[in-house]
Length: 394
Image 1 (cartoon, rainbow, N blue to C red):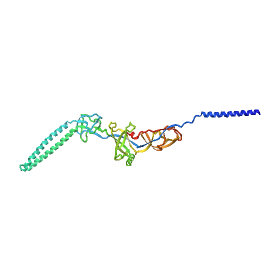
Image 2 (image 1 turned 120 degrees about the vertical axis):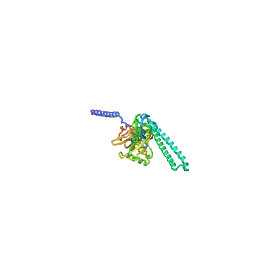
Image 3 (image 1 turned 180 degrees about the horizontal axis):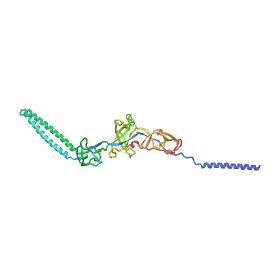
Image 4 (image 1 turned 135 degrees about the vertical axis):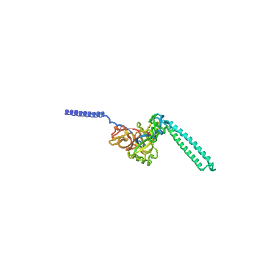
């Protein structure tokens, strides 16, 4: 009996030790487990709210406001060239000289003939005046008096013909010195000194060309859809009517990302081209620095909508899910919500969001790759910086 009692006590003691060991092991295991991971950190910001106007872009090329072919107006041998190829010239600058001596001789001869004709006319007029009292006294016949009247008329007609001939000769003499009809940049000479040039109106010799530089024009084509859009906006008063008022436009060259050059759209063609289905438009730009040249391609931007309030986000905040675009919005407790959005153009580096979010939403703008819909994040709030549209356009 005593031995059984001892065995029971030993068994109880062993069980107690075993339970204590298990409890200690559980406590130690729990102590070794790492704490639960914190939600991933992200940067959030509220969308920028601003009044904007959307801009449409087109490609076109510069053309000179004025282009002149410099041609000979009289025939003769070219004796002087008074410009350098490619030079910038001013209106009235001398360009070419055609040998003036034959024309000077003709003018001198006609001037002498005019002087002789004037002398004959003066004598005939005085002779007529002397005959007036004689015919009244019947000292000369009426026929003689009429003959003297005829001589006066003939000498006056001859004198006028000589005057016209002298004026034409002096004009030809003036045309031997060819001057620039406009200011601009001249091309190369097409005829060298010593060559005979023809001044016939039907086949006159082309000597060079001049294109104006400042201001310069820019031509581009707009589609029928764009034409209808602009026409309706103009009728609604949402933007200036480009046919009645010069519309502001901005231009960028091929090596420029922004549109730093301001101008005005001043002409629209009166019909749509049958072959292309496009409407030709023109803008004008100042070119005081000579940066633009005829034939140069560039991009032009003009207002494509009325001004309206819009929400804007950086493109980095927008993700793609197959064919859908979406953003992640974070609640006050860090919960993430998936929101599909409809996008518009980029303005001043920010994307227009037409629908899908509110101005009060905190959108994830950095760390979007660490986010899962329905999960939680640790948000760090920031502010989106943007440049006002008007300042960016200058």
